[in-house]
Image (cartoon, rainbow over all chains, first blue to last red; front, side, top):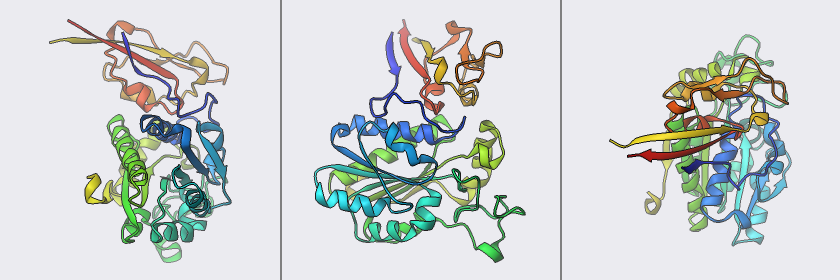
Length: 248
Length: 76
């Protein structure tokens, strides 16, 4: 018998603190597997965000640096400009990247920084207890929107990938999901491409991963995946928004 | 046609009982073991009828907590 699936060396042996059924674990694994497969594990530097994945530095088996809330792309910019040969990535949630860190991500893309961003979009603030995020869907309940998000009050949910795809410096922008094994495999391909774009020196790459938050959505992990499919995927369509011709 | 035969192993104490693995098994053999509780306090995922396993790796792909290792061989 040959082993077809085992724990990647891209992650440490530590058990994650994430809630049962949280898809952060899947996305961590994909990033770890990609770093290992590209052979850059020894020279990768990750920037951890603030949010549920604040402890990501304990889980990725490479050098990690913690950044202030939303500032991971700014820290990554500094790291990459000093260590041009290293593979630098940020791992951020939607509260971190789309809200307080919106300026940092837009300008990192705008400058065409040669970094990779993994953007985990679960449409809510997880760590702080389920507040409304810029990505929260219309009608979706959150502790700061007990009757559901109201467009007249809070505007429409922010489509980060579509927004960043309008910026010339962002050379690879793709939205993926981790709700089924097939989509997980596609997500891994996208994450790999985003890293390849950086390694080849082409520019900024971001992969938005639609994720679940069973705890703050108030659903079981299985129901949460169904909710993601029925509610998030129609508003946040999966697909590639920008690819440099060469990496297609 | 060659038939695939698989074997899955669970690192039980890492399991958080989310049950996602049970939803993606094409032969529906991954179950939660309601008779036991692991070190984290959850009913761990397990497989009783291992002879039915085809080693597709779906359960391990879906598992957020790296509980599952999958082996496979092709029967001729």
